[in-house]
Image 1 (cartoon, rainbow, N blue to C red):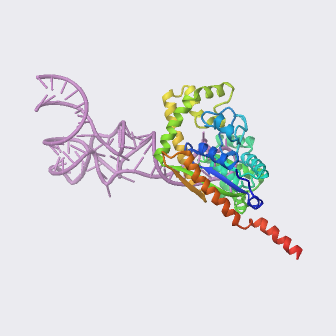
Image 2: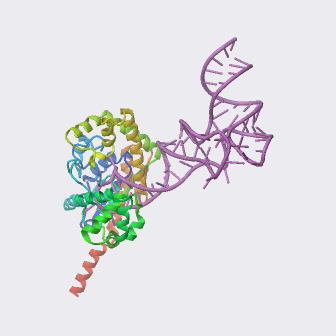
Image 3: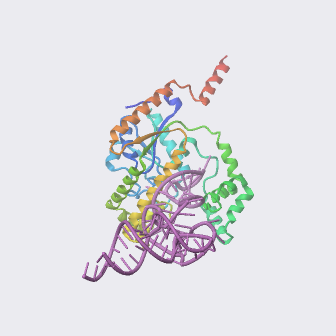
Length: 343
RNA sequence: GGCGCCGUACCCAAGUGGCUAAGGGAGCAGUCUGCAAAACUGCGAUGCGGCGGUUCGAACCCGCCCGGCGCCU
């Protein structure tokens, strides 16, 4: 059981286990959290929804009994949730763990959430559903590239970067502009100098692509055996509309379409497998370009316990290295000031 | 053994003498700062089973061969 020293706490160490869906994060995460005497802080944009358990592959009751899991089941499927809310909730859990001298341990595949937590979000206002609806409405009645044109007027730099079809990001940029009076480009520039929340060790779990795809297909089959259709039908019956962000997640989207008669059962299974493969591939692209990830490749027959051992070694040397590292700049400056004042 | 139909990318497939061989699926590569399991972008044949021939020009017409399917003996 690991207890952080004062010196460690100054550095605010944080360990994150990331990787594509179905790579085996959950199982290895539970072993590691247990060994480290800490909890699992999920970084998963789908497990936050209550009642969506099967296709989000939430940890089992058994897994949760041994190790508390946080940042799961935070909102109802029709409530808004986003990276900003995740960051705030995660920071609360992290402070609590530091108070108990425990090591915060993040496990999850939502790259944006991990980044938002470690590096913070830019100082832009949160999303405003009413304003978005208004912008979408305007776009609907004007010509095709209207919103992109509007963005080009106020933030030509970002407009050049965004494809005219990329409505989601164009609307976000216009939203920030309207709400704060500043261009999103400016807000981003300012954020680049922001201090990180913690000293992170980010471990990326990797598998051979073919092996990963095979695991994905097997996992989708178990979702259906575990009642994905029934769960989706139940959510729809409770009035959770297919247009909700939560219902657009993998599994619920395909099954809802099947239940609506869009295609047959076999096609729903086929599409969910395919879409999950595509998703895993996008996750790999995201994490591949994220700097400072330590990659660990899992061989197919390798047991989770043996992978956990390897990762434990990485975590121990990370903590040992922090011990020898001078305090972060902000704290060093404070010590320096004190010396000057004293002298 | 004979006759007929067919062979275009990993898969399906359009094209049946003249732009640079449609399209779809799968796959690959990428973007991402408050919906991120979302949304968005980019990319496959110097070649049409093979070898000859006809033609200014052949995936397309002709011959032979190879492979597949069907029917007949």
